[in-house]
Length: 47
Image (tube, rainbow, N blue to C red):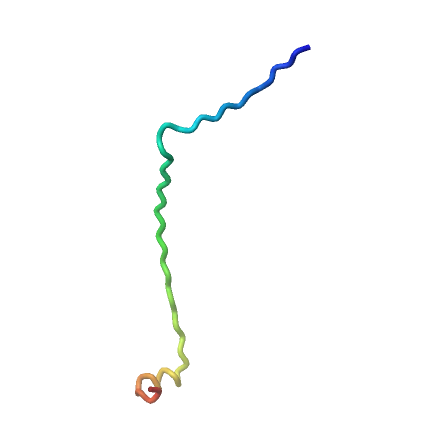
C-alpha cells in the first residue's frame, strides 16, 4: 500500500508587508495638594 505524502509549500509574498498603526495616547495627570501646602505655595512661604 502506498500512501499520499502531503507537502506544504510556503512562498514569500511579492510585495513587502506593510503594517499601519495609528496609536493615540492621552495622559491625564491630577495633582492633589493639601490645603495648607497650597496656601504656602500661594503666599511664597515655601521657597
